Image (cartoon, rainbow, N blue to C red; front, side, top):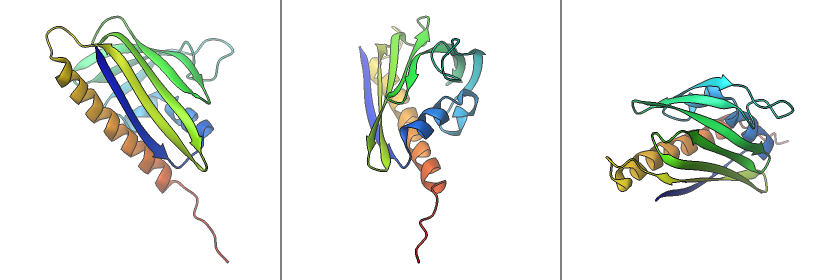
Length: 149
C-alpha cells in the first residue's frame, strides 16, 4: 500500500485556496503536470468541484482524475481506472490557523506491480512537496503589504 502524508502552511484563507486549486487548467503553475478539463462539475456544484473530471499528464503518463468533493474543508479526488496507481484516493484538507491555512495532502493507493512502491512514493512525494512550496510562495508573493503609519 502506498501512503503519502504531507503538510504545508500557506498565507491565505480556505476560500481562496479552494478557488486556486479548482482552477484545474492553471495547476501546472504548482505541479509538474499539465491538466485539461474533460468534464465540468455536476450541476449545482462549485466550478471545478464535485463531478469535474480532468486529464493529467505527468512523468510520461496520462490519466484522468475525478473530483469527489470540494468545499471549504478541502478537496477529495480519485484516479479514474487503475493506472498509474490502483485504488487511488487523494484528500487535500484545509485547516485555518489564524491568518494562514494548513494544507494536509493525503494519498493512498497501490503502486503498479512493475515498480517498487518506495520509488513511486518518492516520485509522488517529490512532486507534491514541490507543489506545496510553489503554492505557499504564490500566496506569500501575492500577499497585500501591511501599511504602517
